[in-house]
Image (cartoon, rainbow, N blue to C red; front, side, top):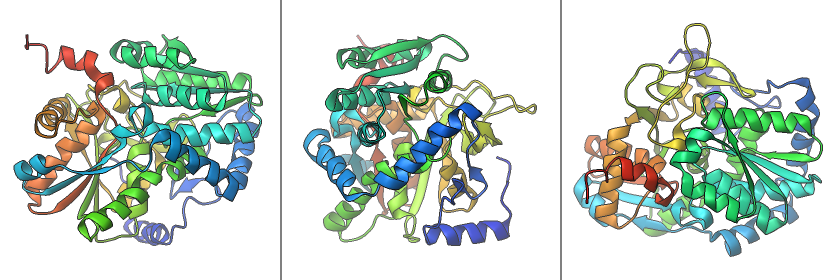
Length: 414
């Protein structure tokens, strides 16, 4: 990773983070973030910013949002002490169970909030992109709940490996559009959603699924997903009487991770660890680990760390996990790594699948392959810090991954 912040700048930015003085009015997380979009989208983003400023912390909006989270999403999600994994790994392991949220992942928190905002802004339809399918399912469900038409763009490759979620989206009333251009995964799906939005920026609301994209999306998604970390923080104090020693989460675009990290950022005694998709190796095209191997640049509306070649061309990525298979990362994560507040590492496909199998056998929980990167990283972290208390964000359940699991860890089983 190319260093873009000096030691002196990092010290100043860390102080701003501790005071919660970020992002700035331009949507910058230090040097990262911002808004790099065609002129045709500027009015739509201005309207969105005005809506965020007006409604996001409005009492009536928050009352409606939290009512849906409680009665429909099923929040608060439980905190589970993983007794057998704790014995095996030599640490106290706690799982924040976003897999038990309605539709099976953390994505529903953001989708409900954004669709409520879309209605406030007078939008006539909602569009979304999806990789693993969980944001697509969540958007489809939220739109059905709140009576909004929904169109979801999904890469052709992801539609094949996440077939169960394609069916779920259709049953929930969404139109699913296959994307056959580019790498036919999440990046291509985002591109198509942006093209749709440009064609009708007034009547269409783009429900972006991760903490990426132009301002104010990274901030908006963080605020909606931080319910994860706020709940987990309270639950850890109630259960153990103290904060965890480490908070650990998987990182693709980064919505699940920033959701659980953000409420702990000021707790300097708490370590935070993000796990990216290490795929098959360290070379370009072999992984999706933007923070570990990326360089700064602009992708899909924001300046952040990206997987690109020496000519600045964005590279195709690889991960066994569709939800982590993206060549960029949210700008807030780039900041938190650059100032040293969060440590980020890569986990390869093999270790992630092994952690998934171990969690199934030890705890009776089938995690998503995305979440299994966090589990594998936590196992490694526990071996280096024995006896510590680790809080792991279990971002989703693995039912959606059965086609991939049949071809990988189950292929030799009768």
